[in-house]
Image (tube, rainbow, N blue to C red):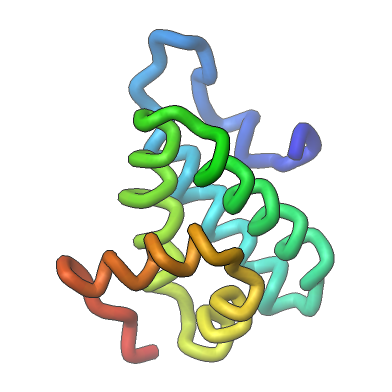
Length: 107
């Protein structure tokens, strides 16, 4: 996680308001890994996301829900379907709740 290029683009101080942008960028970066065949790192990130749904506080899980998961919905269909197979139970449950507000991309 510490090696991700995404971290270099944002102010990560406690007072930063860029947290949701970071989560969207992380999701986009993970989608690129999947497209390039790097499923191992994508699975590691999805395992971390699952752990945060179990152990994280409300602000953290809210950002994951509204930004990270929504960005997955916008990924290419083949990529998105593979990412969905990597989701743990809590991640998957929250992903499918999003269908009340969003729809997956047709691409």
